[in-house]
Length: 224
Image (tube, rainbow, N blue to C red; front, side, top):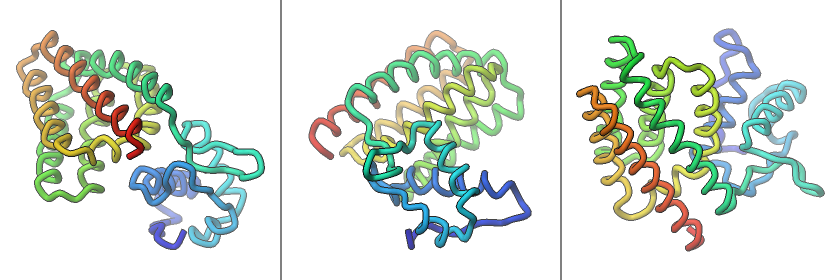
């Protein structure tokens, strides 16, 4: 894939992890769309890595539910069904509102500061209107919240869900009127969290996830 950025730094992190991160970002940004094939030879040439390293990375993405092996075609980016979407958002809603409540109880002052920075970064990115920066900033907010919940098991499950939701985030944010609503919803959640109002936080989070699920399901049903 010629438009896949090559940012391999062989001494900064394990090469396998860098390849995973690059491919995951390419899927999240839409450079690889659902149903696109992942051809090993082309990826090895583009990323300048060996086939064993690439295969290890692809196995990780397969375990995360981002790619799968299709008979007669090989590996391709997963296409989520309406039922997949319903289940993902159902589980996400239950766990993420709990994670927000646990963040209120468990997070350190440093984590609160990072969350505030993430909120500001998301609003700034939305004002600029660059889709990739919006997705990155929104992901930073969620990642910070999950990291501060104090429950590694819940954080691990939510991280896996968010990796799959990357396949959908561009769909929901691209819907007319969705981005302003998303900013407002997350701002309300953040403000409820800062006042330590756990009940209000969970209520707002449930509404936010339900809204995201509804918009995404409607977009998929319309073929967008």
